[in-house]
Length: 358
Image (cartoon, rainbow, N blue to C red; front, side, top):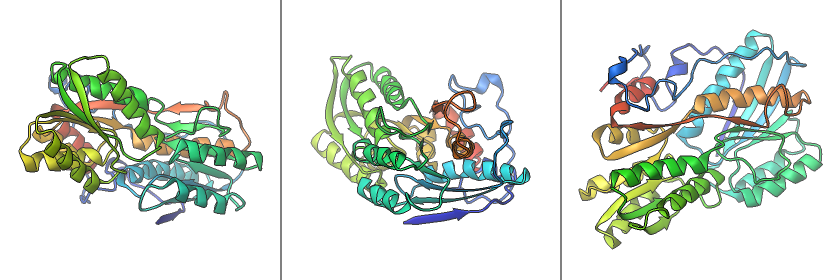
């Protein structure tokens, strides 16, 4: 279990440019790439570190929040970095925000349900939930709202449609992300071949929606055949083993669609080990995945703007805590972008996020 209780502190500009996975401690200078060297989906703008609090004046000078997310994982560390920057800017205005940021070591809707039961009567201004399983957690959120809790959702997974949660900040287009990645794969394969889908965690809305987008896109092309759909539970090791199993059963596997941040890495390790030319498309900014992208093992990655998710989550949480409902001050759905990047983008993304110069 991971527990982080945050109090505001100064973040230098360089920290805002290097995600927690980085081992680099020196200041990184990110040089603009000449226009002619940029790909169609340039990394410029894929991750937005330049945020400032809006003009809203909070009603209190101290707030205490609780956030629970799917699993201890570097993706949510990147979200936390955006939260920390918002927290720092509030402190500069004389407003202290503390929060607990907690998740299990392995994805579990039952674990999340238990956590919410323990904190719903605690002294938190806001409870934020990255929904582990919409069927299990959405009714829990409804009960909490009915009991007077202020609950929002955030990150990559909203609650089920019709849930009483107050607002959501994060990726609102997971289905489209899955469809876009799959379309890129189909074009690469000339719309024919056997493919597999590695989903992620059972019931996780973002993973399930991406897989659904992938399946619907594959269904458009009669010469594309889905030979396997497997759940790796957001584990690199599971994704690696599942990919090996799929390759054993389907040696002529043409492609793999990966629906979370862990499975492109596991799939790429397996593909490399076997010397296969299977084409991989997947999600997010894992450093190892970006290196595989640079080497051509992974064809493309859909990178989400985790920093913006974290920053906007904290800002919306303050407004909800003050009793404001969605409307002029903030929308019910705050959408954050996903950018699909390719081999030619990998080096710049590695430098931007990790300080790695290839």
